[in-house]
Image 1 (cartoon, rainbow, N blue to C red):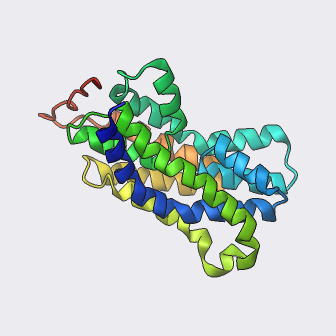
Image 2 (image 1 turned 45 degrees about the vertical axis):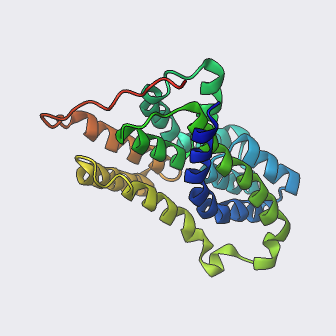
Length: 238
């Protein structure tokens, strides 16, 4: 374990942790509002660790939906993580099997985005850096879930004060972080159009996966720009 790289990861993940704290608290409040106990809410955050699918899950639990449909809906929302893992695999192939287990467990949206940006800058995606970045987000997520579960009832309806818009703003910020990539606009436009259309004709939460797949298919079909070099090789962690 390289302590300097671990600390670098912690420093990099700290602003994400601060930004994600309201989501953890919001989930805790919504979970208790839908009949979860405080322990249930914290356990779901610890085991699932995916804010968007946790939100979907608690809403379905609150409506007494069949368990298989809950699992299928959560899979639909989290399908993008399959794409994340395929994309990030080339950067962490030097990890051991145990390290990869923890890496994929901690693979949330900002973890993926920052790992990709780090590799693009030619910096190694070492396990020490990756773990530091991930843990500084993971453990406060659990703490904030507990805080939201305990004190969430004091704020009343989260939608009344606009907390329901935090999640879309968060994802929009992540997407805009890749705005300088080639073919960004057409891929995002097609993905957005497909997602909106699927929302109307198929329904939630499938519009998330359908929109993502539409963007991936367009990116795969577009020709690679001539003269574009490959990603810098990731050095093996010492």
